[in-house]
Structures are given as structure tokens and as C-alpha cells.
Length: 212
Image (cartoon, rainbow, N blue to C red):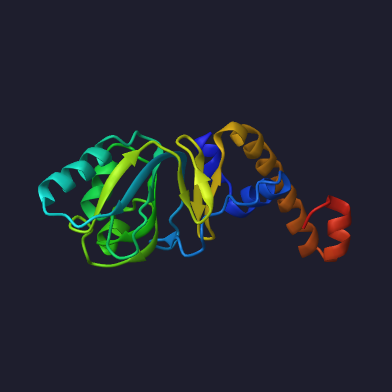
């Protein structure tokens, strides 16, 4: 399923979810790929955190490192940080996850070491970039619990798909049906694209194919 989700584009998935009445499944548009061309697909490994003034840097970073070490291969680490200042992810975190086959990372928060991560080729989607480290200012509070980002509820195991347009979250309990419908939609849109290029008007194409 991960390869099939990765072959799709997020707009097709968003449209299928809309048609099903699931209209709060796209993450805020401020969460963008760290570098052009980055794409990600996998099941969510959720991370929750909160702002915290730390007196014990060592204890805090150990919690973060333990979290990073628990993300399974082929999953996407999804952070709900509740923190809008510091970098919650950097190069060594990316190298660690990439070396174990983790699919990528989506952060409702900050990232740093952007050039090195882009060179590594590890997919990261983030709200902002900053050189400031979060360890003195933020801490992990839980993993593998339901989280919320921009009104989108994300449960462990939900499917997370990101591309140049943004990030869509597909609930696990409808993932197979949404995937199949999105594949059919993408194939139909290929036919529409060819018809429009051949001179078919937009309205005629819509009436013929039932979508546009």
C-alpha cells in the first residue's frame, strides 16, 4: 500500500476524501516540503510535545532520542509540537531515521540543518525553519497517541501522503477504499487531460467523465 500511495498525488486523495464527507484531512498549507521534489508516504508514528523550560538538557534530549529510535521502518514520524519557535528536527535526526528505513517526517513545528537534510534526501515537511534548538525549550510528552494538527486528527497508523501541494492524512479504517478510488480518479484524470489537449471543452469533458 505504501508504494501505491506514493505513486498518487495528494490532490486526488483530497478529492476522494471530500467526496466521502471527510473534509478536514489536509494539513495546514504552511506545512511545506523542506526541499523541492520531496514526497512522502507511510503510516503515521505520532509524536506529541509541549513547550517546557528545561534545567536538565541531558534528560530532555534522551527522551527525544528514545522517541527517534522507536519509529518503525516505512512509517512517517508526525510531530504535533504545540510550539512555534524552535527547531524540533535536524540533520542527525534525519540521518538516524533514514538509516533505519523510516519513510519521512512531518512537523507542525520547526526544522534546522536544512541543506544537510536536503543532501541526505530524507523527506521532511515542516512549518518553518530556524537555527534555534528546541531541547532547552520543548519536550516530547507522548508517542503513538492521537494528535491534532490544524484541526486534522491523526491517529497512529493513519496514512500520511505528502508532495509539492502539501500533506493529506487518510484514516486507517478507510485507507484501502480511498486508495482504490484515488487510483481510479487518477486514471480518469489522465483520460480527461488527453481529451482536453485534443480540443474537448472543459464542460464537455466534465459531462463525459463526470469530473474535472
